Length: 137
Image (cartoon, rainbow, N blue to C red; front, side):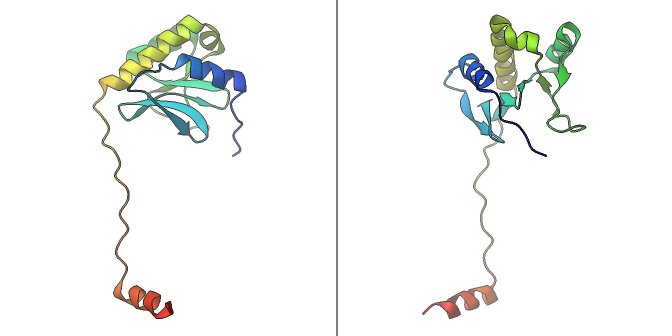
């Protein structure tokens, strides 16, 4: 499956909308701009979609009021707690900022994710060491 890059205007909107708070880390996820806090992705882009991580009540409100759908990066593969915003919300800068703030607050309300430590390499078997050392001059 080939994914399209997000349009430059959407990327610029994302950069302008995501808060520049000390607890917000911006990085790319699958090549798309993303914002993390407390170890959780709370806002991001995927192709032409602006996605947010929200609690159940906020998801229900957005679905009811704006027809927002659950986020599916691939058909049939929903990402729990994530919604793909409608064009109407994305085009309304004050509303978009409010929903991004709600997503940020929701992620901050969750228990911090444990940081992943670098994977430790398994020790080589004694036979593997001999082979390696046999190749050295």
